[in-house]
Image 1: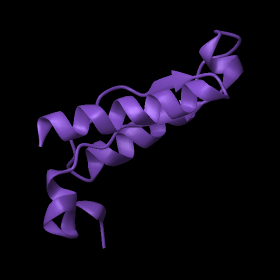
Image 2 (image 1 turned 180 degrees about the vertical axis):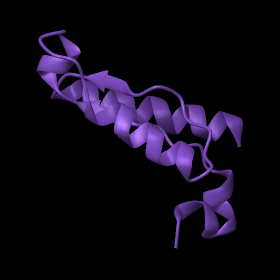
Image 3 (image 1 turned 60 degrees about the vertical axis):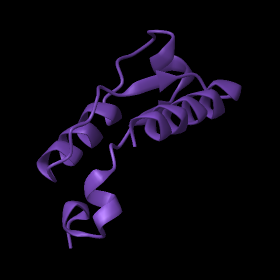
Image 4 (image 1 turned 90 degrees about the horizontal axis):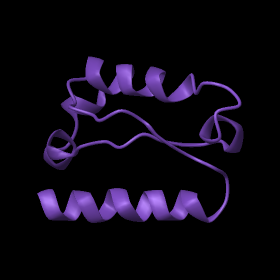
Length: 75
């Protein structure tokens, strides 16, 4: 079953793709994982923003916290 066909809450959910990569975050190389995940979510019928790329470490938790806060405001 595709995610968009699941529970009602899943159809209302707005996924956020967060990529934890220090080298992608600092521009050493381009993130290739995030765009693949965004494309998959779009194929499943979700509206999704571009990926958030953060360095490994506390920034990952901050990005997750920010995504959850944004999600709670929009529901």
